[in-house]
Image (cartoon, rainbow, N blue to C red; front, side):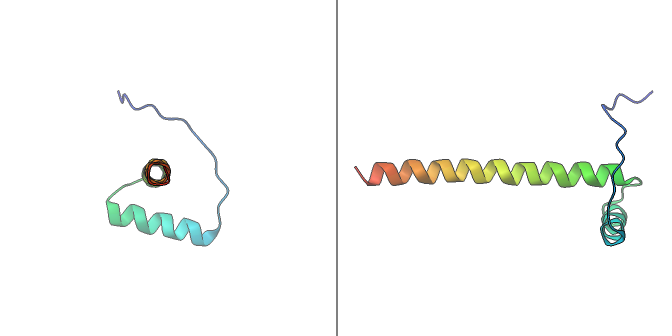
Length: 67
């Protein structure tokens, strides 16, 4: 029995997006599109959090320089 924490979701996407998801699945060796979507969301979330972290660090640096 699988111990994955999964939920079933229905998504409406364009045919071009489906094509790209299928290509990414084939390239990454995944059999289902859910794994590709998980990977894309995880990567996007990391890039957003790094951007927020970098933005906060640069604001802190700018405030220290302006003193």
